[in-house]
Length: 122
Length: 137
Image (tube, rainbow over all chains, first blue to last red; front, side, top):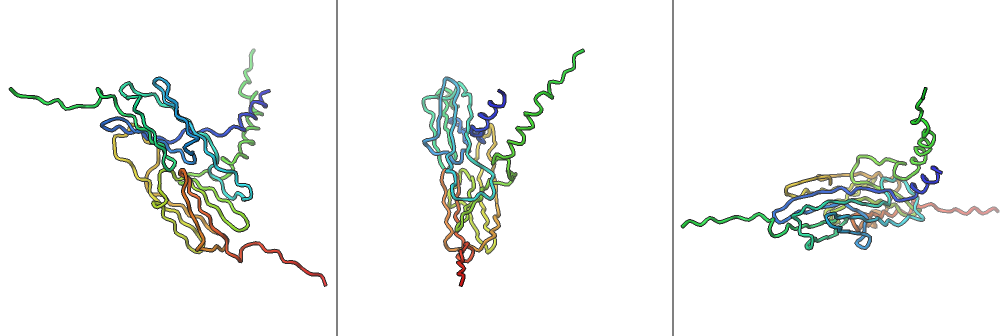
């Protein structure tokens, strides 16, 4: 029985955690994920309470007539989840996919943006 | 007396797995530290080179073709800011592909799609396999 289970496991696409940069800016956070090979339609972003989950499949066509010479990458599935901080304004999250890099902009909620307090002298 | 042999019970299946794993394209060849990852394949009249270079425009990649090699160069520029986490590689990269067949240099094409760079190198006429028919007289 264990053998059967292993087989099914192997036929599934390999899963990767995409390489990620998280940068804080004054107005919020920006997350960059390297997801080469993922088309816009194959990308899924789920926001569930405080968790944002990003997943996507690559769709490299199988080279039918080509003879493979050297292989370092193949089709796979990217998946990664992040827990959002309370200060992120969840309604204003923006996502852009360009050249295989997903850019998630997570703006801070109004009250969390640092503000200078002016002191007035009387 | 109890002899615990449990780590050994799984031994054959783990062994099988090791061998099976070797046949998956991920482990079969050099999934090396070289960046960017490269796939090479060929047909009778073309060589295909595919590289995963996310985040770069095609104009930012420098392709140099010499007689025997194709050099792919570029730079992944770091983003300025306060990093909480940095996993994406930055900096200059270069990969050299040695070409073992004569190619027609003027017909090489490259295109970028979703972070995948595909270079199509047509082989020169003389390197294509030819059928020679022998007539028996």
